[in-house]
Length: 272
Image 1: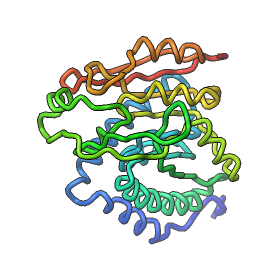
Image 2: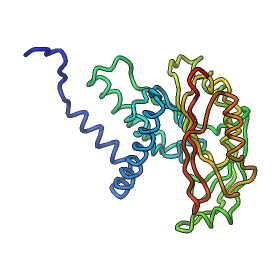
Image 3: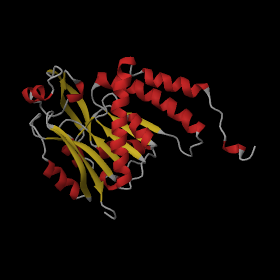
Image 4: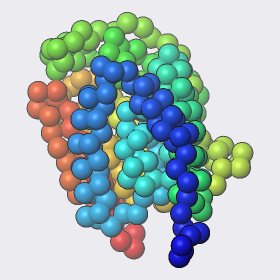
């Protein structure tokens, strides 16, 4: 057989690990997960190709249960740092991350990748300074925030489910810059050129604590709020002005009028 060195034996371990990873979502959530992932693969994949951003590492801020982890891996991001402050949510995220890491490492060997996939976790909120802060925990945990919620506005935007404040807990807060420096000091060599952030109104403060990280970032995708769902919400113009100072331009966006939010993709200008 010519070129026999390029062939790798397919291991039953690959199938076993993949099935275990999928099972973490449960049978009832598999179709939802597939729909959620495929639509986002189309959006993010198209945007990355359109603006010639080569996937390296993704900062996944507000990871929640990690619903987009497989999207980042399938798009080719070799390093993913998932950040989530809610203790109970983080426990589930950690289980999923361990399963994804095991599967990724086996596939790295199967595909003879030169570098191994790195999936890292941090249990903290992200803002413009290190310390502690109150986290407003909502009945729908994805809506929890450092910003005080407007229960009426949130309820009006989410009529299919109960949305109410259930707790207020102290959580550790880090800046992206200090967190990345800590990981680097501990031996991490991961480089991140993408940032996805959905932290319910705290995005601008998080960006203000990421001035060093912004030097390496090429692609940012973040949530905007167009209704007063939380106190102290930044405007789209404030995002544009702040990120413009670091060479980023808003290139694409979407609005969900019924929910009162939307998303904006920012791309760094070439040579900036």
